[in-house]
Length: 304
Image (cartoon, rainbow, N blue to C red; front, top):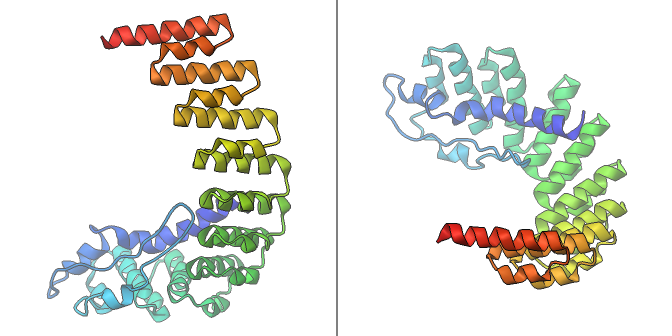
């Protein structure tokens, strides 16, 4: 299973688990509308779809005593009743509540979410289905931000994915080193380098092309044209300089570009951004220079 599908499966389990209780018009409203129960707010679980899966650690303490799990049996709709038990199972970190769920799929996934809420990998050992057991370990690893749990995953690709996502959550490059695929190690390091804007992480990337891409990305994030000089590939280095020149609207950076076509494109872009016809004079190509002058003159005329 590739990393994209792994994340989709992991997030799908969370959607089935906590997404069903995040809708204020479904489970919460059914509980609140149950006869004899007062209205009020119920703490909800949170999910982060960028790859870091989280939940409200204090949910067990914030649920009002008046909204106990016995209210679920009064919910008429079967699906919403399951969602109610699902919610309280996670919120109270109580595996036994999963047994009240009738839907087979939700019932199988419920212990995974409870294990995540408890940050208890030992609960995963009781799951007989190999795929769901691996998913459980991955979910607990993410919730606990503990890469060591990933080693319990049997399927190597899912284990690598687990290390990858925990590494992103913790920004810990050492977790990347546990990945067995060298290409994926570099991808892991690259993502952390971008997130932290850290050149030192780029230096640890083994693939030259990926390392160049890393330097260029960090340079652009920092808007530091000097970092572009560390890019070994000429085209990528000058693309880096061009991007920063545009971002900073600084035509002096264009002067550092050697390739004539890219240099002209740099001056043209900044001249248009600043609506400064004088910058067009730096363009060597006559047609491009005239295009620059005409474009700015027309734009200024339109504004007036």
